[in-house]
Length: 94
Image 1 (cartoon, helix red, strand yellow):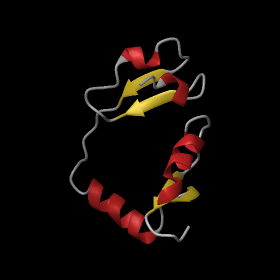
Image 2 (tube, helix red, strand yellow):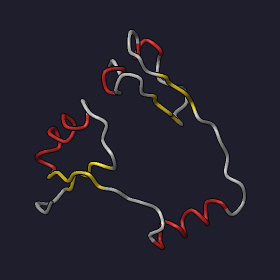
Image 3 (cartoon, rainbow, N blue to C red):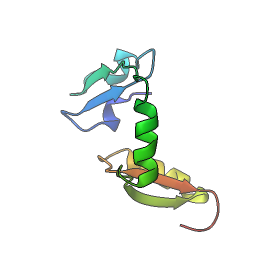
């Protein structure tokens, strides 16, 4: 699968996945790909979890889709930069 078209021209992909995506996936695309490697020091994950539970971290949901419309969510995500998350829910509520 060519990943380059999924990222806007001049954009960049930061990934924590190892191994990183194949460079051929971005052939001809104006995209910068970087692998981010880091470790958490003692207490940092607990602090992050506390911020999340307190609502201090933004959790922007830019779209909700029913499971039956999951393909539409994928189509909506591909051509544009999505701010926040697209959520696919398993029940009929959106």
